[in-house]
Image (cartoon, rainbow, N blue to C red):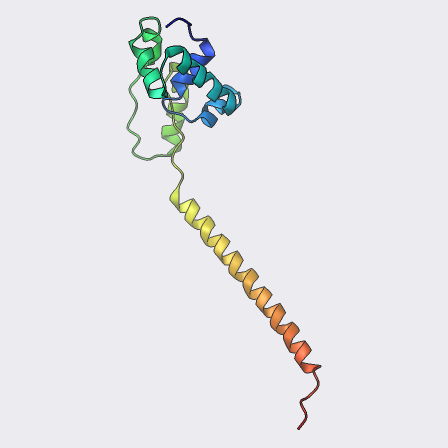
Length: 149
């Protein structure tokens, strides 16, 4: 490996093991395009064609081996209830230890509720449009000339 990686390239490459470019960009305060650029340059310098291979190369290289994988100081608690505020409050302090935290999964009940509300509003709008059209047709029909008898 002729070129040493910059600190930002190392950050982006390490975070890419568990995060998307957009998430890394938000975390580091840079554009996701910049994150992609850092990762591509790091892969070029390491002489590999994938991020997974680049992470393996980092772990096996003595120059980066000690920094390649951060180990949390305390064990990860059992997260039996994802999104539980008590669990999440205990985990927020662990970001300084180098552990990677993922956001809780989206709650299904919220998505179902929003879908039902959207469907009800759409149904009400449709019924209102049908009523307006039928009233307009009825008003036009009352002014229409009668057919000859």
